[in-house]
Amino acid sequence: MLKVSGHIILSQALFGGRKMKRVKPGPGLHVIIGCVRAGKTEAIISLVRLYEIAGLDILKVKPVQDTRSGAEFWSRNGTAVEAVIVTSPDEIFKLVKKRHKIIAIDEVQFFDECLLSVVEKLILAGKYVIVAGLNLDWRGRPFSTSAGLMAMATEEIDFRQAVCMTCGSLHANRSRRTTLNKETVEVGFNYEPQCIRCFVPPLDET
Image (tube, rainbow, N blue to C red; front, side):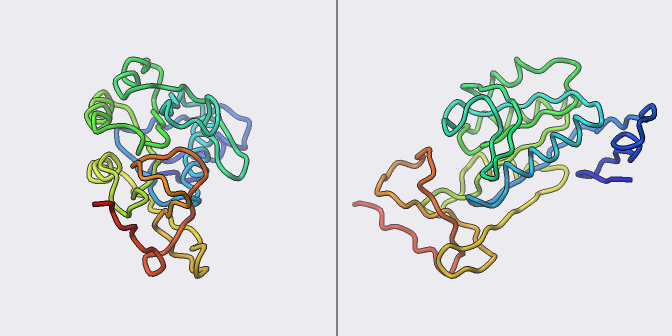
């Protein structure tokens, strides 16, 4: 048998070709978190694909602010799955149908803290929610939405690290911005992972 995020999907559902004994995931929150290039989106895509093979209906959503790709979860290794683009957390709850057993949300750091109440409503409605996003901003400060979701997690918190682009260690957990932009959020590929020893927080302008 194959265990995915605390739920059992029988191997015959994946490979046997026989009638599946489907296991419905219970309500809960699984958080995938980490710095840039840590495989967060790849992880959420892998979970989505496994649950879809098991015959479960999944609503996949991403924020409109993530303009690096179209209406899809897209990872740096080239894998992607279709998703719905939303402009606010409230839109997510409006899109949910009774058939949706799982709600997958990528790039949660782009949403404001209203996402926390939406996720809570989804869990209370019996949905299993999977979220993925950045832990810290370019200054090394926690994204409030990401931090709140980690505190709310009822299932696994999958903390992912990357290769530090300065020293080569496998413990990068910060995202260094490579431009001079001072905005809290800058969409694009202008970031690189660094470990805590190599990361130097930028000096705020006074």
